[in-house]
Image (cartoon, rainbow, N blue to C red; front, side, top):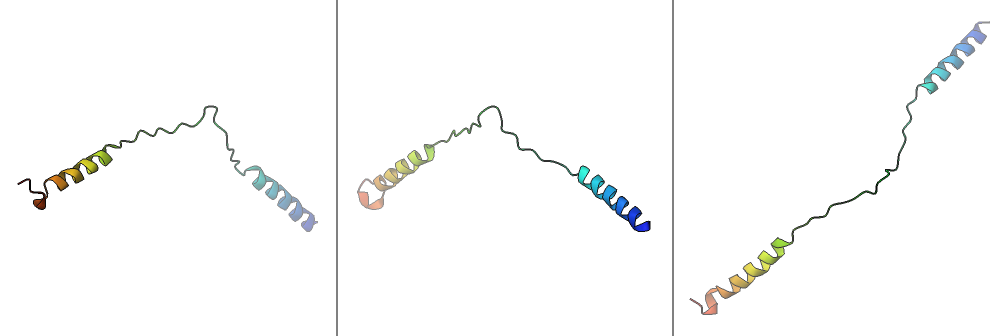
Length: 64
């Protein structure tokens, strides 16, 4: 008799534990994902101009 009560309580306990497990759902968005890539390329231009100016103002260029 006690074994049957123990089994019944274990069944009820396991059913109660599994009923309380959280569920995770992954939902696909309705709109497409957009990635904004506003990148400034200004630094490349500055480096090129600075290198050219360094070449012009070099000591061995004869400018000064």
